[in-house]
Amino acid sequence: MTWPVAMIPYTNMAPYRELGTPAGCRFVSLVPRESITALCQKRVIAAAVPVGGLAAVAGETEFLGPFGIAAAERSMSVLFFSDRPLGEMGAGTRIRLTEESASSVRLLYLVLGYRNGFDNLPQPAAPGEIANGELLIGDAALKRMRNRRLNETDTSLSADAFVTDLAGEWHGIHRLPFVFARWVVRKDAPTKARLALEAWLAEFRTRENELVQRAVPGAARRLGLSEQDIRLYFRVIRRSLDPSDMAGQARFVSEFEKHFADTLGCPLPSPVLPVDIPGFKRRIPG
Image (cartoon, rainbow, N blue to C red):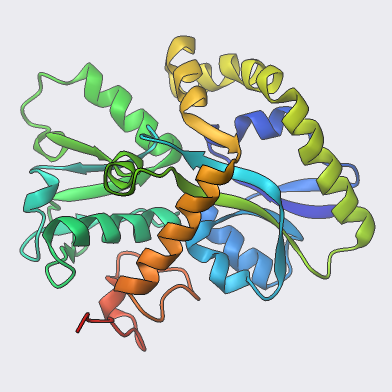
């Protein structure tokens, strides 16, 4: 018998995968948002869970040290593509949201609220409706940027006219990194499994540079990018987190609680605006 551990299949987690599985464990491939449900349902004992979903698993999990996925100043793979500047994306515009994210969707709503007001958020595009903007994360975002570079003179790609790196927006406002995910373990996980996960992450920290370099060629082939592009991407992504990352994580949680109420305990459905969720209450200042 092996213990199931959620593993995000994106390139940003490739250095973790290069280390192999923790002793006695097996990886279960889950996109970020799915890992929240899997932890709650006890289908996995550990995961790099989206920070936007931490409240949903807070009573049942604990952090596995300062490990996760973060970015300072830019992420290169959490991108909002739009046909107009971010400051013009008000209530009269339509957007599509990735269905794989919890943190990134929440971050997008915060950034749009900062820019245009929290009572002036874009509306979700209906199926088949032309959208003014689209949020993509992970490999999908990296591939979209690759295709955009190849077709940058194609004026038919109006929805790609503007690209906003949401981690960059966050950093510009708060001067802090943005933490997208943190490694957590269920509190009821067997002691032997917890020790194996802790040893795995400790080894990762000591070998991180080596594992990052090993992950470059395969990631470049899968995405159709140059190895130079992947090395840059891996330098942008932070996996062993420091106090500035922790400060960024705390600020994100407090900012979301300040502007939105009653949503941190469940993943935001997509493509539904948070104000459309039954039981959702916007906290209106004053």
